[in-house]
Length: 373
Image 1 (cartoon, rainbow, N blue to C red):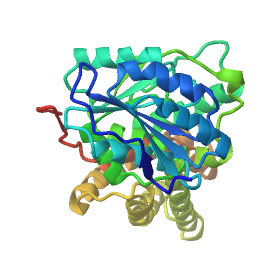
Image 2 (cartoon, rainbow, N blue to C red):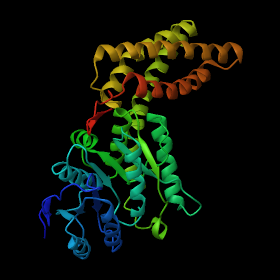
Image 3 (tube, rainbow, N blue to C red):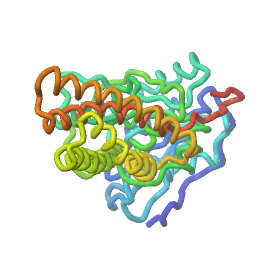
Image 4 (cartoon, rainbow, N blue to C red):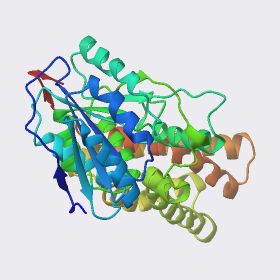
C-alpha cells in the first residue's frame, strides 16, 4: 500500500509544449471505472496529470493504477480518507513544487461529472484574457438536474451571493482553474477539510481577486447523482458557517439591545426614540468585537475597521430610527412589535455592509507570467 502522500510513477517533468502550462489535478475517493476514461480523455489537453487517492479501497486503487499506463500521470495516495479538501491541498502542493509561475492547475472531479471535452474552453479563456487567476466551469442546469442537487445548488448560490456578492452561478462546481499565484495563496491560507474547502477557495477568490472568470460546461449528473459524497447537513455548515456565526453574534447583540430598550422605556420611562439610540449604543461595542473576532476573524487594522464600523452604525441607526418612527407614529404599530421588525431589516443590511465594506479581505497583488492583477 502506498504511504501517506507518497507519489508513484513521477517522471521528470517534460519540456513545455503547447498545452504545458496546464496541470490536471484529480482528487479521487472510490470513483469507479469512470476515472480511467476521465483521465485518458483529459490527457491530450494537459501537460501532466496528478491523481490523489484519498484512501480508496483496494479495488478502486487498482483502477487508479491503470491510469499510470500513461507516463504523464502521477498517483499520490493518502493512507486513510481525509476528505476532498485535504486531497485538493495535497494535489495543489504537489503541482506547485513542479510548475512554473506561468502555469495553471485545472481541477476536475474523478467520477465523470465533468466532461474533459470542456477543457479547451478553459484554454480558450486563457488565450483571450490576460488576467485569469481563478476560473469556474459553471453548470446552468436543466430539467434533468436531480431535485437534491437543484435545492443544494440554489441554497448555496443564495447564501454565497448574500454574503459575498458577485454573479457566480454555480458555487458547487469542482471544475476549476487556478493560476500558480492563486494556487500558492490557496495552499498557504486555506485549511484542509472536506467539501467546505472548495467553498473556502471560492470565498478566498471572492475576497482577494477583482475578477472570477467562468466558462459554461455541460451539466452531467450520473445515476441521478446517487454516488455523490456530498453530505447535505454536515457539509452545508461549512458553506453557511460565516452566516451562522454572524447570526449568532447579531442575535445576541439584538437581545442585549432589545432588553436595554425595554428597560429604558417601560422601567425608566425614557422616550422610545431616545431609548432606541441608547440601546443601540450599549450593544455596539459587543457587536463590533463579536463580528471582528468571531464572525469575520478579521486581521485588518483596528482603527480603520472601527471607523468604517462607526459610520455603518450611524447609518443603520438613522435608518432604524426613521423606520421605527414610521411604524409607530405613522402606522400605529405597538413599540414592542415595531422594534424587532425594524431590526430584522437592519440585520440583513448590516451583514452586507460588514462583509463587504467593514471587514473585507485586502485585494492581493498576484503576478502570473509577468502580468499582475
